[in-house]
Length: 271
Image (cartoon, rainbow, N blue to C red):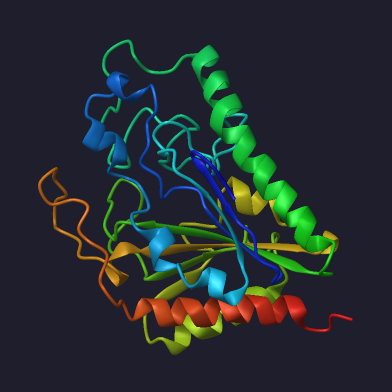
């Protein structure tokens, strides 16, 4: 099931995997940016392809092809910061992760344009998430919303040093049962790669908005450091970024076990 920029693949397992930042499309708005490449640079490159096994597990997937620079569907639509006091980007970002201006002078979206982009892309994306979660809940007492992300390993403006390979976010424990977070942590630890729970990335608006454990919806965010599945140059340029997805990244097997664990968590104690 698809509608141009919004792709929905329905499964029957109690798991929805969302891809809010893997898109690079800027329909009708590209000319306002300083550089089309810069406007696409901070995408979660290839993340939907990294998780291409999800459908084989019976998971439902929801993906937008719209670039996060057009509108970020994982930000609070009110404009409130998810991380007060820390560097971040807005609902309609005006800078890159590194703080570089995205728009030409006088071309940044005003309130009317932000509202237009919300209506075109933000609202339908979240209507799709809500509808798919409701569908899965009719068949399962518990469902897991797994919000899939990735980011460059080194971005000094956002965090110090090298980011752990696996960054698990549960809104400090509010968006899911501790047993789900524990299941994901166990698989990350078994990989031998670095991981952290509720570190720099505690979960974006999707995790915080939909995670309602008492209502049977358990939301968790996974922010991967990109080095786990693609080469990262010291300084990304139009000539070297993005690099290709590794043909067979070992990380994929770990992620498959993580998603299997999410499904097992949801099915445990089901009638």
